[in-house]
Image (cartoon, rainbow, N blue to C red):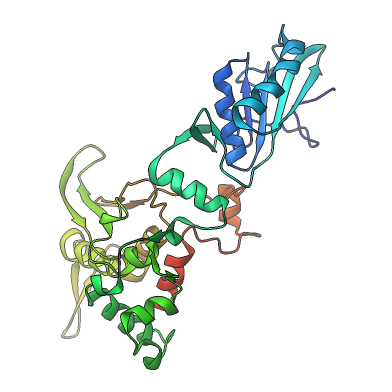
Length: 340
């Protein structure tokens, strides 16, 4: 089978989400095949250098016979293993498709992310398994928690914001907390979903470590001057973050129009609020890392753990063509939308 590592337009393909190159075979590379199977599928080319040059394999024909059995016996999946030739030099191409269920290699789970292969444990593994069955991390049911365990504060904030934004009517929110959770699709059978606890519980970190926001004022990239950690229900956390930044971190310049005093801040409030809300709503809460906001004299840097949707590149996000809305946490996004 002849193969050229260039696409039809003559542009050389680089290692990416779906492509990995190795100069020779090691059995540990079965982890990469596992990672592709748990992601969107991909191809592992053996006998190609990191620069994409074919360097060849002396044992290519032996691998052609051995690899399908190794893949099948260690992971229970079938992959396409082909002997390819470029410039009269043999190399192996292993192609594996995305699998509907989570695949393990020797009891461990791996996931291809960008050009890296990551071992999944804890919440990250839970999220993989949930997504394989059509659920998201915020849709995981949580036992032994009842609506009566919640304080009313976050529910009151939600009711006020939802009515003020005209996304819900006063009649819609004039129900019990449990009925409100049910209307927001945050109850499944006898269980509350994790999104309910993250949005409304006074201490969501009991179930979702890393749901807080850390704010720091930096003189430069190395020198932290002071910091705050904002915790609590997600439905209220954005307001707390905004208050902390505008009261403690931003310097307001005062000017007057007639007798009216006007405070001018380095960033419009609605712009920062949008960025903070996006960081909260679309974070990957399986990593356990908090949201970080770094304030400098001349810029604000907001960071959260998350990834682009599958097969979406940064260029696509910039031009906005064919993307649509793909929230990482659809239940969180839905509740925030209704709260305005």
